[in-house]
Image 1: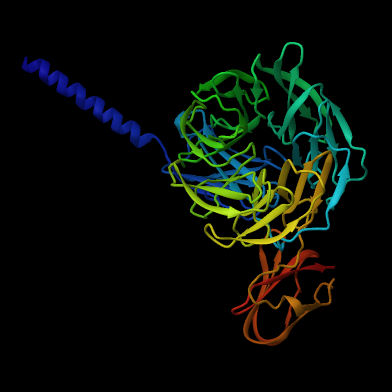
Image 2: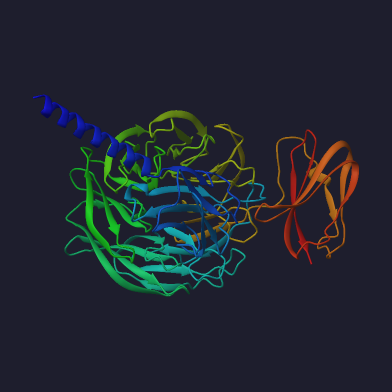
Length: 561
């Protein structure tokens, strides 16, 4: 008996020692750069992850841009416990970026995080609106499909995808877009699903006679020419299929396919990507709900290093649903939160600046509001303030439209309401924007004219709309804006910039920075005039910000020749 007891004790000790050794040998993430859910990362930032011990063999750090280049090319370097990826091209202003750390030798090390690239300048006042007709009546997507550095627009019709190529100024060369024929088109999504560094199209269509839905990959050849490839059967005899979305929910470095089905019980479905754009058998989360889903968005709501799913219902219940990921792509329905009264969209981002993802949902009524759901940091939410937002709000977008590092709101209804985030959950209204006579059904805040700030791009009623952001910053605080003068502009290399304020001040700062937000000259002065040297700077477009003490900053564009 004593011998058996000793053997059992010895075995338990060995098992405990082995377990301790295993834990000691398993690395964990100690920090990531930029930080999770950062709202204004420098556009030329490197992406990095640091582990608790030396970096394991076979590990990779993949970075995906949502607007340009898809899976980014660049240089990866490992130094001790840190792996750093230096992208070969800068991120776009306001671009949502997904970083994925993965290793085959340590499967439980997979870690996914997201951040947003900074926008610079902008006033948050928009216009005049550029209107292009002949657009489709379905959803629209924005991205650089031809690799020329500017953002193009794709608009869905019932039988075709209309492709509008940007001239670089936010305008399109004609009202005759190139066409991609797809019969009985339901919706589409842009994303680099085959990992070759350009944006492909995933298009959902339906066979009317059999009521069978399928999603087809149209591969981009890198210049914006698309070729039909593999198709994934989605469902048959269901009443509704939501628009598809993309996200790396299993942390293996590629974008997976996500959508929902309605026809009885609600199902949230994921197809895992094998890395080449071929999707596997569905992973299905069935719920007791009978609601239809208007929109799915991936995001790490519980801050555990994998992408969860946030949904907004299409029906009058207007509920936001949360589906938590176990890290492998298996989802569990967590909670539903009442948020709206209509089929409108939602926007997800760190609204209050506390490092986690919040949700904004508009209401459709004569006096609309945007209801905020604020994250507690663990994927549970509490109701925040209701922000007044014009009339008949249906679609909402988040983005930093005035370059102050906060996420502002744009809400489409009868007009587009622009709500500036003053910090936390305090918003003030800027002038509304009239895009056209039709209701706007797709709305994005993106840099259409390439000047570093976020413009409004929308579609609805067969039209595309682009409303450029004005470059002179306005504010309801006292400002030197009305008589702030700078000359010469354009300015020659090695020629000083002359700055004049309307009256003398006790102290002020003049700062010249790139469109990426990097400061290149900074100078403090007093009085009403000063000079800023440009010697040694490369020619190009810069932003000059002047801020007297106690006044709001004023920003103007400077061209250095």
